[in-house]
Image (cartoon, rainbow, N blue to C red):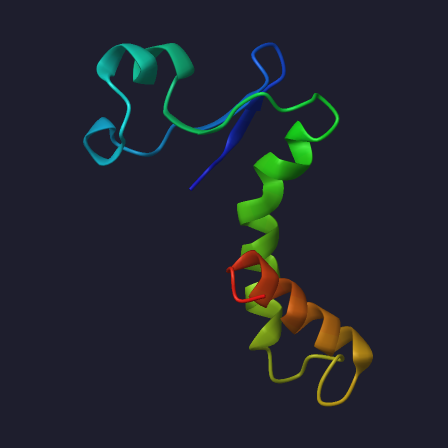
Length: 91
């Protein structure tokens, strides 16, 4: 999954999603250049939102590292796990 922000249109798309897996018609899919994730996004927020899937993947990879310096009881680990839960809709 690679989300891309288009500041000119103010939208985020996923160009890797096949058209068969979207709810868009062909014309809209071709216009946006992929599956439309979000629109009407201000320019300052677009890059952060487009990077969200990548940041979540990094956070998730950090939670399973055994030699993690944030192991057991570190308040940073608690915040890390809370952020993952929030991103996944558990909070």
